[in-house]
Length: 351
Image (cartoon, rainbow, N blue to C red; front, side):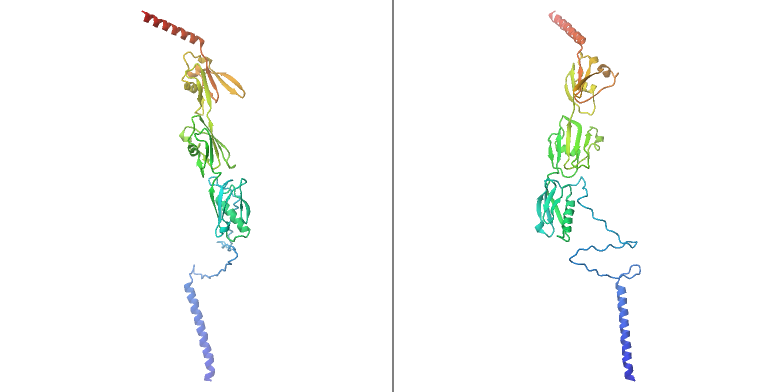
């Protein structure tokens, strides 16, 4: 009887020991695991395949539904900012793929804006920034299955289309390699400034169609410098127009042609440039000769009333001619007075 009870007692003792060990293990795990609001956390092991590059599932948001990742933008269709440098025809590019030196090469962009690369063939890169071109080449390598995670770098070694053309009435017309965006005054300063024949009209033709051509009137007022100093981008053309010329002829002290260095030039201002009329001038007979197409029109100008502030001043246009005639009566009287003065002077000397 004593021997028959020995086996159940031993089994009971062993079972109690296993239960105690299990309870101790659970208490140790609960003490080591960090608690978040009193709730226990469970660890999960995620096995990633070394061959496939499958993206992980999006984490659920606060509402419990998984958040959708934003769709990647197509680099070929995305338009670059005008202030950034863009790839153009004739540019020399250095293209490299990390970990694949056999793919590295230097290519020049063709006149059609394309380059020929290994594995993926012809790719159009003109009009893209280097970052967009890198994304486009990476996408083509990934879509073709040539790389699982390509990293492409593109470096511009030579720029052929990033210059700004400055033409017209500047000291040094030409193409200036000014990378990035610049102000109009910076571009004019790079060309040596304007010539004495330069006018106030400036035409800016942008290479990109998203920016229409601009025609500006440069004023001498410094308060308009911000409005008349727009951004100029690589590939644009700046033309400084020649100033208009008005002509003052007739019985004036210094007849000739005068540059319209102001947006508005009046008859009185043009007469002042000619140093005024002579005493023998017939101010009532002044005429304005203006070209209208292939013909010329003569318009009477009441110059005497204008100088006396009894008539409004008249604005002149480029190629206008202000003619101040000579007064025959004043000339005869002046010649008579000169003859009398000469005779009186001679008589005084003879005596």
